[in-house]
Image (cartoon, rainbow, N blue to C red; front, side, top):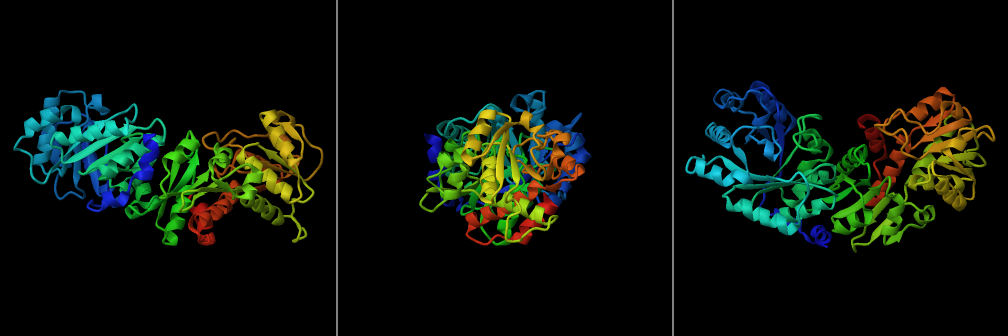
Length: 529
């Protein structure tokens, strides 16, 4: 299919030879002129390259009164002036003539860029004929809030925009699935004029971060959370400081976390800083994926070099890999995928070591035991969840000599894993009254209690009184309701952050071939996430 070729066939280096660095543009969306001018200064302080002045956001906007205030020189940043009508996703509801006059005045006052919509571009070009200052560049834009057209349709759209006399092409589409972004990357690479190509919403997020790799003219980053001018727009601070967008180029390797949901993940903060600390030319992004096989087939370039895998794709990843590490195959779940230089996908599991070692160390900190014997040996170990993480913990606990019990909302799923492990199966309802012995260990591997559902818990506080040790794989929030109530019952609690840190160290080593910067990665997780 077309998208399957788009990211494997493109050669970013060829497209980027003659292009300048991708700029970071901050939308200024204040309702008052002086506040908008202040937003320009705030954008400059963040390290942005220019600011988009969204005139349609201003309340009671009077061009001749307000534009001299907003565009007063000296300005802290170059200005891109946009006066977006409602029919193109903006807030302006008046006539085009008044809007065009305001944009022309902005040009005369020294705006470096002006944006006008493709639908009215010819009309606007007639108005400004011979009146556009040489130092002002015209962006002609097209926004699709429903979908992302085919690569061929996008190429035709580029040609249409170029034919208007635009200095810069802008196309923004909407992703219905993450593979849509590949079509935009293909257009960016092959376009011979400056182009802004972005794909909106969570599934299109990577277009905003990876556009420098493919030669995009600029990307948008909001002033702060809550000030976005388009769906799933990152903050400028995150683009610059988390994703290191200034360092992304044609040769940058791409890694990321595949999941659904994935927006909660702290992995980009952790891996990007770890990459930067060792001078590894790579970026790590969130991939919101519906169909894992389709995603891997589409983003098949060697530049898409490795992936972390989380809920709900860990089991499907086993089937999608060309080779699977024997332990990961025994577990039946992959949380790490590496693409070798020959293009083959190899799957690993770092969850089981990360989680089991975290639980063992948590117990050793409070219980005096033989250091040569696992503190899990001989103990009853109850795993909640029968998905990828549940399989990893069940396998790891059994390897350490624990007697493993599987509990799951769906009994059939619990029984399937219990049969593989050689232990009993329970429903969550059964677990409420399960108390065969003292000193039991509980490990939650489900998403119950994860942000934003922070008031949920897989087991009642009353039932928690039966456990000596409680582990929760959920790490957002850092203290889940399960862990808080377990601690109140006197149990030793082990945070999912420990599993997260340790499995990430294993992933880093698979991704880079270098030893993980252990202390740095631990410090990042504990202080920055």
